[in-house]
Amino acid sequence: MKLIAGNSNRRLSEAIAHTLTTSLAVADIKTFKDGEVFVEIQENVRGEDVFVIQSTSHPANDHLMELLITIDALTRASASRITAVIPYFGYARQDRKAGPRTPISAKLVANLITTAGADRVLTLDLHAGQIQGFFDIPTDNLFAVKEFERRAREIFNHNLNDMTVVSPDVGGVVRARALSKRLDQRPLAIVDKRREGPGQSEVMNIIGDVDGRHCFIFDDIIDSGGTLCNAAQAIMDKGAKSVSACVTHGVLSDSAAARIIKADALTRLIITDSIEAPADVAACPKIEQVTIAPLFGEAIRRIANEESVSSLFD
Image (cartoon, rainbow, N blue to C red; front, top):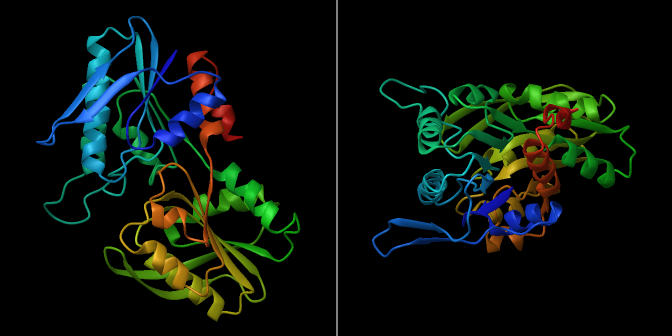
């Protein structure tokens, strides 16, 4: 087994390698001055089971090309099996035709990864579970809910009596219910909102009782942070004691970190390290990261040993 890291999240790749008590294979992945990506695998990979670790986060297109070209290089170097380990799958929000004459980019990206030569995909908290069906190769979608359950119990000192899990929209109810189930069947609330445009939303109503409760919002992606801050304020306006949030993928583009700091209604934001945090996010006192390196390390070990991965979801 060999692990190869792209440039999108080197820190996470090294942490995954550490959990597997191994080191990253030597590879030269660089960009020429004209923007072209060049990859050279500097170790023998003939007949090897290779895992390429690369989130397709910002800059999404550069990191996607790094992943595709690395897979192609491994294919031409006669690797026996290539698994694309994609902690954050970019373009996942473009999973359907949102209007006339618009693409389904998530399907296109899935086709590109398959055509490049990947034999398997390992990812985390896809925006929509159906995206697994976009791939014509085995695809494992891991879940960060265990890490958030552990952190929630630490925050509330294992006293969950006054806690409510909140879904930020109707589409996230299944995800929120999974966390609620793990947290001793805590009550569930839903934010009913109307989205006016990309990155903008207007909170309309809170479905469920949040009065006098410590609320824990659970979502898969946070980008601008506007939706989350609006939801937190609406929940506090309904009488909640506090509002915390856990979000798997912290895209946090532009001035999102500053927006989180200014949101008085939001006590804390917990994200995973599926996307490497830029300096402003890492320095934000309200934002903390939990690592998913042990989760990916165990999944990679099981795939390499031909063991069950689904039992990780229990």
